[in-house]
Image (cartoon, rainbow, N blue to C red; front, side):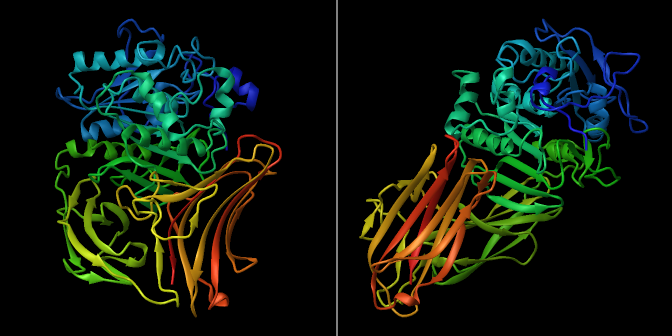
Length: 597
């Protein structure tokens, strides 16, 4: 499969070999595939302000579009043109159907020999400068000449256009309400030609706070809301690594004030779909990691409502029409005649309010909608613990993962248009106890002093609130990071004085991250029981090239400790990382909900 590069020609020569289509003989623009029959051509707007980025502006305005309609800004990838991108994405077809206008900025060859937007040049990605300002001026022209609604302006793009989308969201959060990124990456991932390669390979290492600060610094003093983000990325993309998708989530979750743990993670057709919501249940970030896709736009030609787009160079059929799902995420489908603006209704039906529960508990709800319910999520203490996509809506919850005491249960229902209905909450009491000879012990790190149980020596581990398996506000998890830097680093924590009875078991929750690994790197999480000697009872090892990330908590349940019956032992938690040829490898483990029974 051919690849479209987010880099300009010089950078392409530094990292790989570009394949570009020949320019049209009648224009400097790349040749366009044949448009769908009946699709109206784009109209060029020759003047739209000072245009410091020297871009071209094309637009599509459906006939009879009234003032106050939304506006989408759609940016092509390298070697493409506005007309090519319009044909592949069929944004104009969606504009006719759902009644909004579209602007297609275009990069001329005089700015970039590969027709790439200059997403890596400070002079083009800063507020009030270069290409970013030129595109903002295109929006200004649309609001003044066409009457586009300034409160409903959205940006989208592929590859270099995808990177440029995040530039616009960062530099003009007061202009753009949302963005849709196809095979792009985080804002300010590269700020010069020399570091574009590291960016595209996913090798720019920053914390979520650092990524977020780059966005906040793009418009100092801004105190308004930031745009919501939807992103599509090929799981086999070797031009812009899937790690760039993870970095975008880290950046924008930090900016939007939500955590980077997905509230929904599911298989949707050919993709892994994840949704990250705020405290009110609103989807702020949605991502699709598309299996079998390289560096390409995902389309789904067909006649169904959610089908469309055209295949061609850098556009592949993966049964997922990205333009449609971007429009749905932004709420543009609601503006169509008969659009769905009615939220589902949902009610918890089990367990009973005020009841005392233990062991495995069935959470159940009834839900209905005028069009159809797509999912019901169940919540404990405000955090999503799972969901169901079909009636009867139910979830089996292991209450032993919760601390004893009162907990608030909730449910919310979603429909295909993104409307959310919320059920009245109810409170139950969790009471688990007994067993294991020495009595059941549950460690959630939720006590005021940090640990619930005596006998802890944290060593190289710390307690943090950034990740927590209980979902209780202010609760902690136990974490350690090992950065080997040309060697081996080991972090150890112990829990001593544990009296074990017959049939004792250990359960715990973990979340692991191993980043920037080369072929010589290795990371390991080990759990030992020490009765005078170390006995390995659980282990997770990663030694492959790249990154390993557990996006959600993994529960290790009922590990057998019967060999230590009648003994007083020490539990040892060990994180080890080895890398003899790099300084950037990092291995991190978060542990929570340790239970001895």
